[in-house]
Amino acid sequence: MQQPGPPRDNVASVRIATWNVNSVKQRVPRLLPWLDQRQPDVVCLQETKLADDAFMALLGDELAGRGYELALHGEATWNGVAILSRAGLEDVARGFPGEPGFPHPEARAVAATCDGVRVVSVYVPNGRVPDSDHYRYKLAWLASLRDALASGRDALVVCGDMNIAPTDDDVFNPEAYVGHTHVTAPERAALRELKALGLHDVVRDRWPQERVFTYWDYRAGMFHQDLGMRIDLVLASQPVADRVRAAWVDRHARKGSGPSDHAPVIIDLDEAPDGDIGPVVPPPSRPAPRGKPAKLPQSDLTPGGV
View 1 (cartoon, rainbow, N blue to C red):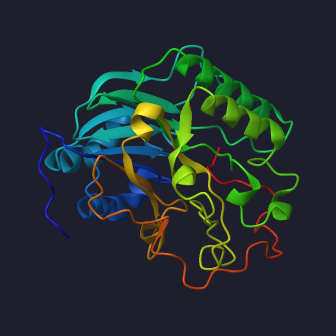
View 2 (view 1 turned 180 degrees about the vertical axis):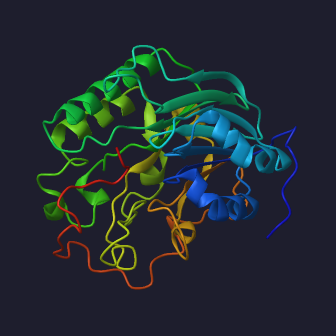
């Protein structure tokens, strides 16, 4: 393991990452070595599944030793988001005005300003089943997020588990998802309305024709066949998008023992320490043909949890 990096007082370039860790307690053996290897300056986490005091007890000292300040918005067992930053951490906000609940507001959004960029880590509701109460909650939550960001900062990054595949190109086989959430027209319209605030899907903009996924079910060999979907996004306003020098999915973090079912997404601003690599690092060695007929390994689509 590499030695932890020091706090960065003068940030010439910024590496921003987002990762649904699917329980930070379970992912500690993967998270800390990954931080040491990839050296991100700002990290947005989702599905931490820990109350804030428990998060601090678990990781506060380890992260402080690596130079990270923390903005936490968690709850026990479910949901939970966080921002780790060694590029400054100011004006922290947990949740957002008008945020709906199910029935009460949940720990799904946290924001902070890092090196002059407003960073928002989001964990969008799953939706569970089309036309269900939770599905309607998902759409209302996205509409409220859009409204809350409408008068926001010029330099803005909204990233996290959106629980929406933007287009059919972002799933391994559109026919496999018919009747499920994450791909319905209202969900995609809600995402387009969020992007209409002037936000750019920086990974897709950089790799418009490539096969890029960020989530693979644990079961049925989905990961090894690269039968996944792209639901973890980095959306950036024009001033930030203009600074992007690399944008990629760290597929290596999804391999091996005890991974999350999501891979981190990384963008480099101003400089790219590893070069303009991507879109997926490393690429899958034996991907199934695109459009391969396949049944999802569960009756209900449940990436991203609740």
